[in-house]
Image 1: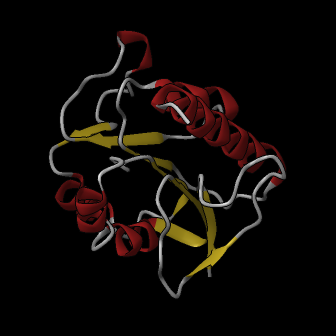
Image 2: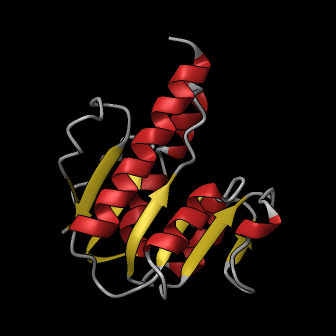
Length: 159
């Protein structure tokens, strides 16, 4: 499969999972955390799907389209593994982590801190959607939409 086709499938899975979460799954009260703002497309999508929810986005640098910038104070720049720690206990309803790189060594480094960070940010019964698998005893896997190939994207609920 070409990298373009793989990219399209990943984004389609991301959209379909986030739409399912926003439409079909009960979410606790609380903000939404976007780990990896990038261009801001997913942030913009979540803003439309969850109007009225505070969305806090984290990234190493700001590369977002001007139409997809978080509100003042809701874009946190720097190393995500460090900057997001200040939000431990925020009781987020949803954490979306799209920081997979496609490089096994870099993703392995991120997986040393990402599962615990997601748990620390989430409210009890909160949801995490991730482009990489998260192994943590407080995260229970949830079923994906039927048309998403296993291993393409991951969905969990915090106990």
